[in-house]
Length: 474
Image (cartoon, rainbow, N blue to C red):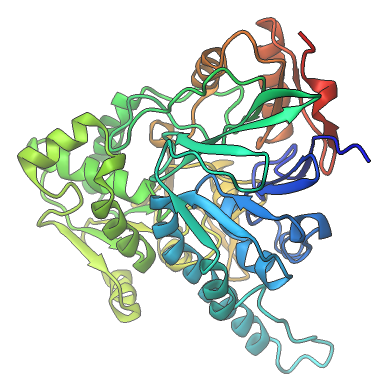
């Protein structure tokens, strides 16, 4: 029997979240990512509960990074019977120790709240959490960490290594060497590609002459403000809101974005550009992840390492309060003077940020600052779309607060940065498979690549593509 090589795009095909791709390498199979789908509640729950048998039966998993849309469904995968190793970078392994347990707590608390709310409804069928803390702990035992650049064999006949994707701490593109059509070929999964010249982390590394590339397209046709505008944009928003006597509420991903904002605020204060204002990092997860950042200086860029030598901890200054207890978080609702509140989750769907939005969204003196990608059908996307009203905890509320979008903070490469990365892969690439983007962004990036003489296709959900038919025979 002849075993062929193929990729099945099980998740993040023509959509952004829920990343999951199955690679069949001869008689072996490897899963790349197992992320949580985010969107409409019922649709997301149904998709996240459904693990394809081929994914469950994969012999190993390669994890690009710790963001929940790439790692968040690992406990479900293990719960359904996955028994292999989960390979990732050392920093990603440390981050997942916090990320997955936090996700499990959210699953359990949200389910308990819904069941209590509907306990008097005779038609209510009690819900079970997607997974529990115990499930997450079992998944964590499968982690197999590697430093960047170390070659390893997740299954026989497949050589792999992680290179720095520059997106978040520990993020990686995956380089694979395998036999396709009887020849040794190189396949790359980009993961999420970061931006160049951002603070904290190194710039993305370019793959080593791949033949085939699976490439993300989150911002495949959009441009960001220059990275150097980050601090100026943030300063402007704070000063304008301070003048109104309002609060600056920043929904932030606990991983990377929260640390970038804290670092930017510290630099503004040190430079004398920002007058003293209380800053609250109200996310136990972000507090824990900040400690992981402190342990992994090997991921810092040269500028940040030099800053640490001259100024010390980039994530601590006297105006910053790390808020961990629920009671301390609730006390922030009674603040009557200007303050900056940074809280998770970044798409405003769960966590303490939802309470802060409920408390501040109808105050015209306040500002809600969006600093990251917002998936369709999330509360964050509705704010970006400037909806006049939004539903929070089941209650329609008027959006009277100012909403500002600061896209200079994005950790995703924009269109030109994606094209720079694609060009850096080399002329020998036979095919780009464009994934992890809304349909308009996938199609646009594929079109831009085609206009540059590249072959690019946008796979459909669950589409299986044989690699010997995609690679040039030269």
